Amino acid sequence: MKTQNEKADSAKGSDLKELLSDKTYLNIPKEGDVVRGEVISITKNEVQVDIPGYRPGIIRGRELSDPIADHEELQVGDEVEATVIDLENENGEVELSFRYAGQRKAWDRMHELFRSGEPLTVKVIEASKGGLIVKVFHLTAFLPVSQLSPENYPRVAGGDKTKILEKLKSFVNGTMDVRIIDVSERDEKVIVSEKAVWEDRQKNIISRYQIGQVVTGEVSALADFGAFIKFDILEGLVHISEIAWQRIDHPRDLLKVGDQVKAEIIGIEGSKIFLSMKKLIDDPWKDVAKKYQVGQKVKGLILKANPFGFFVELDPDIHGLAHISELSRKPVKDVTEIGKPGETIEFMVVSVEPEQHRLGLSLKALEEGMPKDRDRKDDGKGKKKAERDESKKDGESEEENGEEKKDKE
Picture 1: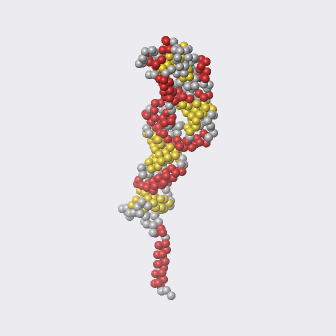
Picture 2: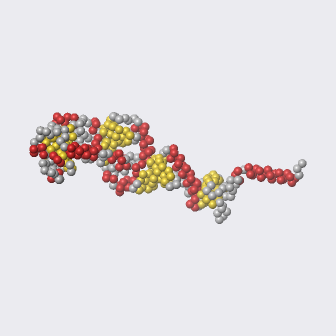
Picture 3: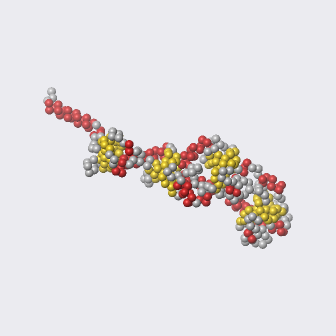
């Protein structure tokens, strides 16, 4: 039978085992640990937290700010998480921080959203020439101009950087739906995209359209390389070469913002839609041979003077080229010595190529008379090359370099 002292020792041993079995009392924190505790007091500038099994902790000053949570409405008894930044301050308390714990949570949340692709709404806080600075969980992220949706992309004539910045500044204090497309915690860098969210939302709508379908829409913007047409909630590009059969210098020659037009879908690449207006119009070059024949004298309006010759309008639909080699029997250094844009001059037709949409004109042949051995298709490699060069120039699409180059008028 145990004596009284033995019973007391046994009780102490049992209490010690129970104490040691409670992991709370073995979990002594260290600097950098995130601990959970109950709020035991709140003042204007500090919050005191009871750390189970350890001494009280204190959060004060700048350490009260949290990138994830708002602690302004904290109450005594609430459970909170904080990071240990000092095990013992001048008052013997554990120095804690909401800020560090919040930043850890914020970066974890950033990585989670990056992996899931889930969209989120952010507030724009600043604008620069390269894009927008937005707030994500009280952290900052960058939204490049190239990642803006077509609706918000700054289409500024001539790419004027000052005007682009003015457009971007108009978004400050507003909100945007974006997706995180790059995260680097080490570099403290987060890149977001509004265009990615826009593209996802377009997929279901775009799937209702197919190549060959005719749509009706409104001209929303004009650029050197083409016109943008809004239809449904989508927007498509009509390249300058697809606006009309005749050569034009700029879409504004035939269109203006707000015009209602019809166009045929000729291409769909992801969220990009390519349209053609001229496909809905009969090709005037099909019957060009009925109107113009080799050897015929015609009057034409000089539309453009290039180093290699004149572009000439014979009628609203048919334009021809008078190559520099066909302007005079003598060498020509400056074509404007012979004619200038806006002048009407008589020429002779020296070649007609309906399939290539080309018609050659000559002043020299008009003076000399049409030689019997002149090639009806093409009478000079230089002229054909010039026509190809100009056609290539007209066909180049700046849109291929990204919609961030779109200029709005």
